[in-house]
Every structure is written in C-alpha cells, then in structure tokens.
Image 1 (tube, rainbow, N blue to C red):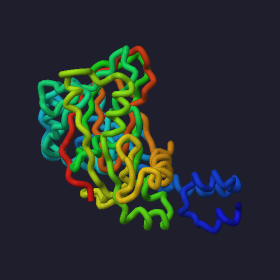
Image 2 (cartoon, rainbow, N blue to C red; image 1 turned 180 degrees about the vertical axis):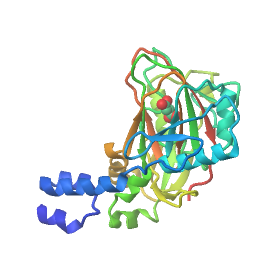
Image 3 (cartoon, helix red, strand yellow; image 1 turned 60 degrees about the vertical axis):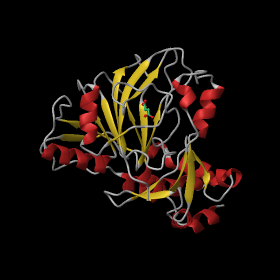
Image 4 (spheres, rainbow, N blue to C red; image 1 turned 135 degrees about the horizontal axis):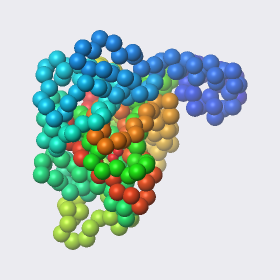
Length: 324
Ligand code: SIN
C-alpha cells in the first residue's frame, strides 16, 4: 500500500492517502503542504474598508459599510477586490431594506430574476424569500450547492440578509472551489478538463414532492418545471482567471454523454473532495448580518439544525454569464 501511495506523487488528494492507510508522518507532511497552499491572503491596502478573514480557506468580514446609503466608486472597487480575494464576504449590523440589498447587488451587475420556485416572490421580482417555518421539514439549500446551476446562466452571486433567526443554529457553510480544483492530482485535472456535466432541478423537485412540500393545485408549486443545463466541470472565473471545480450534489446529475451509473462514482468523489472541512468557512448569523458570495467559485450549504424554529432570510441574485 505504501509503495502505491508514494508512487502517485504529492499532488494526489489527501483523502486518498488517508484511505490507503498512509504512514502518519507522510500524511502530516502532505497536510502541511496543502495548508500552505490555502492561506487566505492578508488584507492590506484597503482605504475605505476593514477586511478581516474568517478562515484559512475563504470568507472575510468587511467593516466600514452602510447598506442603507449609496456607495461611492472607490468603496465599490474595494468591495469587488475583497469579493475576488475572499469569495464570500460578510457584513454585520446593517439596517438594509430589500431595496438597499438590490442597490448593493446592482453594483455587480443586473439583478437576476429566478424562474418560479418554492419560495414566494416578494415585492421586488428578484427577491427570494427563504422562509423556513417551525413545521417545515426541509431547509432551503440543505445540501452543498452553487445557486441554480440548472440554469444556462446561473447567478454570478447572491446577497443574503437575515430577517428572523432561530435562537441558535441556522449557520451557513461555504467551500472554496478554487482550492477544490487546485488540490486535485494533475491526472485528475487532465481528465476533468474536457468534461461537461448536466445540472437539473430534478432532485429538488422530487425531494419536495416526497416531503409533501409542494402545495397541490393552483399554488406557485404548480408552476415548477423541470429545468436543466450543461456546464463545464471545471470553469474559469472571468475576473480572476482561476479555475474552479463546478459540480454540486444538489443539481449535478451526470457527466454529459454518460449515464448516471457511470458518472456517480467520480461525482461522489468530487462532491466529498470539494467540501473537505479545510476548504470551508462557517458563518454565524446575527440580526443585521448580510452575506455576499461568489457562485462561480464557491459552494454553500444552509445548516439544518434548528427543528421547530422559524428562520427568515431575504436574497437577491446578480445575473451571471454562461460558465466557460
Ligand atoms: C441558499 O441561498 O442556498 C440558502 C442559504 C441560507 O439560507 O443560509
């Protein structure tokens, strides 16, 4: 076993070494090696903002902003820089109306109006109301995903604001998909390079049906339709030029031109790999908290750990381009 593990080389995913029963000292060395690659860069050179990284892999809290007021060009440029460097940025103690969230999102592009959905549309067409009621069994976004990758042009990013929180629980987790890609072996990168995957909303629809969440008859549930899109398995971020893994448990069905049975083993590995704990950060919401994540290079998951409680969030999305 040892011989096989050594033969693969340093760029082999760590998890495989662990499964092969690699010697502890070797695993430790590899672990240190991969952590070195993951250090979040220190946040110097901001004039308008204070940017404090939240974890080694991604995520930063950004201070010095007031969502209730328009922001000037330099401030917006600094937010864009923090967004590109940290992938998901968080703001505290904001009194932001839905219109304030929409104005903020528009600094990054047009608002994206999503197709009919489980959530009831609010007054703004682009507003998604994520309302988990005490009696609900399902939490919206309960598995690792990038938002609505079953669309031809999934959103660039989403702005999510806490409106009503459970006393404890309901955190959101994020995972860095540049790291997920960078830490794959060269052989795996070569294999994934030309592959495309089919994404759909099929799992969401069947889970909602199985859970009796879809309202019968005329409700907005009746407007739900099957949607699917084909995207590259590895996409290149248009601003940073970096490559990110782009498959997720909630929406990815299979590789293009392959069956589900053929695709599943490799997809399973990629799902596990892309959400390794050391690629993640975890955000604890408070009243007035807002998150803005980059859907092109991170995944997220809404933690389902507050049964019997309500949690109300408002989200707007920025329109994205077709992944390449
Ligand atoms: C989502 O946008 O997937 C939901 C995230 C959350 O509610 O924490």
